[in-house]
Amino acid sequence: MAEKMSEVFEMYDVSLDHIGRGRGAMLLHTDKGVRQLRATTVGEKRLQAEYEFKEHMYQAGFWHIDRLVKNVEEELITYDRYGNPFVMRMYFDGREMNVNNKNEILLAVDNLVALHRAGRKVWQEIDRDMQIRERNDVKRRNREMKRVHNYIARQSPKREFEALFMQAFPYFYAQGLRCEQAKAEITEDTHMGYCHGTYNHHSVLVCGSADNRYIATINFEKYHIGNQLQDLYYFIRKTVEKNGYTYALLTTILEQYQLGIPLRQADVEYICGLYRYPEKFYKLSNQYMNGAKTRISPKMVEKLNRIIEEEEKKQALLEKLSGYNISKK
Image 1 (tube, rainbow, N blue to C red):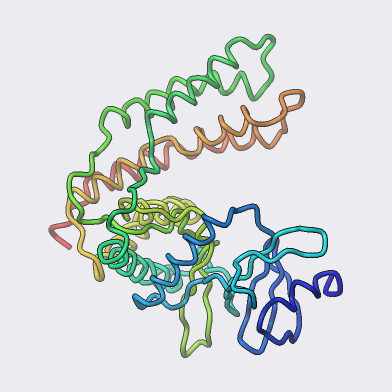
Image 2: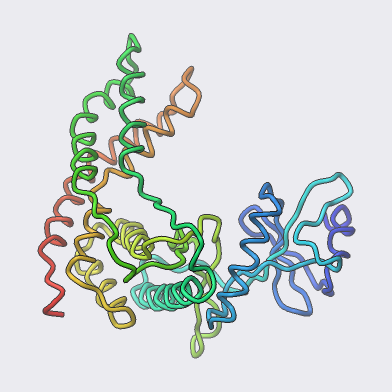
């Protein structure tokens, strides 16, 4: 592999020590630190926007971020001998956050605060005219769920997954409609700024020694300008569910975030509203619709059963969250 990629390596101003493997990428240990080299399907325009965004975030004080590296020809894309495009990013010698380690969760929350502060500053001072993206288009998602329902309704006979889906659909679709009707409108810029888009344990690297730990942030493929509470909700949902829907952990995350960025009662209601949407059911319905219909994997049935089984825990958690009084914290 190293020999095949030698022409790509030579296009960067680094001296290569050794090569490791990451998630679908090569990790290059060089004289200038760790670099990630990955094949890309992203166009030059989007990569240039990512490059500028991350440079601005770095200048705003958010230093541990996987910035793009230009080659010796000042290009963001480097092609191998077969014409395959690659991009290089600065990377870090660390590991993914342990989703069951409270101290690391708190470090990740502090890092999210820093990301949001820098992201708000960059948006306000540099990119104020950039388009705001709404990543929670509930109305569109509900239409897609209904389309899957209508498709399955026409199937005869129905297989195990399809029969179970039809039984569960009325409950989850009704949830989606309630979220559509009660969807909070963004009326002020309190939490507007750059968002990560998929801030979870896969995007958080714990680096450094036990005495000097720090967090590095990666995987910005879905970064956008919007309500930054979407990031906080996403981190809460992923982390709390990995810990058995523990309400105490949820409130700990909220309180830690508040130490850096104040929250209002309306903000808690906004997060609660995002959490109420049947996200997993929606994603599974899409997975079914976009997959091969000739054979449905048994894992699809397992996933749907798990979603149904966990729903009671989720609703109990949301009931407690809806009664969370931020003024007393």
